[in-house]
Amino acid sequence: MVPQSLSYLGRLRCRATHGPSKVEFLTDAPTDNQGRGESFSPTDLLVTSLISCQVTTMGIAAEKEGIGMDGTTVYAEKHMSQDPPRRVARIVVRIDFPSGLSSDQRSRLEHIARTCPVARSIHPDIVLDLLFAYPD
Image (tube, rainbow, N blue to C red; front, side, top):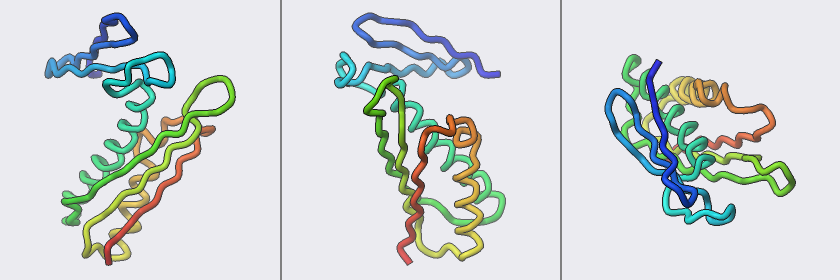
């Protein structure tokens, strides 16, 4: 278990602290929901959690299996529901891999991205559109 804490700073801003490292970051409510949008919103962090989990778990496998994935880049979009209740309705993710990955390596990494712990924790009503791009 990793301890975390959060303080409400007012004006829809929070400071989160990672217990072991003491690293801090701020969150803000988004501009379309009464906030300043000056930092990640809580729903932005959901998307960030997903894509960082995908890349981290792929990286673990890549290091163990000698797969070169340095330079992998991820782009993500969060789409909020248009109908109440307000929630994340869809997440679009594009993972751009470096060249030189074999078909088997691609399949392995794609499977890991689809089944990382955060992907498995996201509510099934959220549509996850995953696109895997290769330059070769």
